[in-house]
Image (cartoon, rainbow, N blue to C red; front, side, top):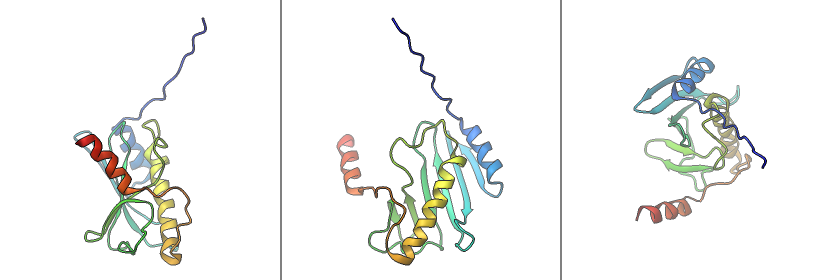
Length: 155
């Protein structure tokens, strides 16, 4: 009988994620409280771009929640605001969609994946503001479908 060994990649702890984020982005703010990492920073996708506030909320073995917020955000009330899981116009905040399900795992560093993906999202967001078309590819989440699936499990 043939035995196969499967090596699981090591999951990074919240402390390791925090250390990597702080080393990579020394002007950011990062804390861990009650098993949840909270990171905020100003991100400027290109030299000609505005600076945007970004936030990551993360727990090991759960997908990171990523937000962009602040007065620099424009077009929040425009129909078809791209790649998001929810727009809060009043508080100038949007939960952004960065990747497909299962593209981020706890064995990846946030500073090497999620943060660059935020910058890339912001780059294409600025193009969308100018042209009205999302050029970043991917699939825009169907919020109604997601809510329907979740409500079935919560009923």
